[in-house]
Image 1 (cartoon, helix red, strand yellow):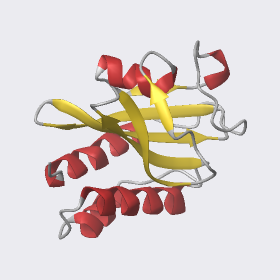
Image 2 (cartoon, one colour):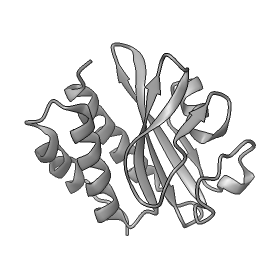
Image 3 (spheres, helix red, strand yellow):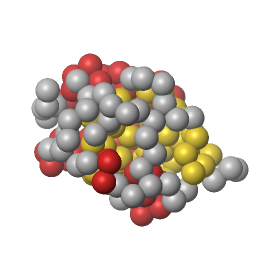
Image 4 (spheres, helix red, strand yellow):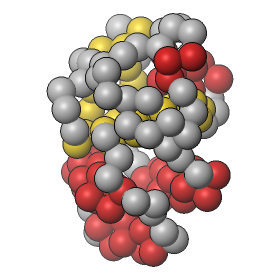
Amino acid sequence: MPISSNIINQIEALISNERNNTANMANISAHLIAESGWHWVGFYTVDKESDQLVLGPFQGPVACTRLNRGMGVCAKSWDTNTTVVVPNVHEFKGHVACSSLSNSEVVIPVRHNESIVALLDIDSVDFDGFTKEEVKLLERIVNKLEERWIE
């Protein structure tokens, strides 16, 4: 089921009084999966020491714990500092398949002080599982998280 613009106000209400990054990512993940029916919704955080992405709060099946640069949709978003939408993950060179049920994916970087600190990663069982409108809404949700981010 597609998400609507009402989700922005709902997410803002969930995180407006909380300054803990983990709590906010957890509530965003839970709310998005409940409202959307997507297969997997979660965050990967940047581990500067290992130069890897590390699994953060998520909703859905067990996920890959660490992701390396240069491999997969998350790494492409991290390396290019852009939102990446993949309509068919099976055609994406270097796709990291944490779940065989995922067919499309969107990844949006979370920035703090001009650096990427985390990524919102969402998988759908549907091919072309994300509309342009949904991607814009997800980017707005990430902006709300960025406004609350603390070091």
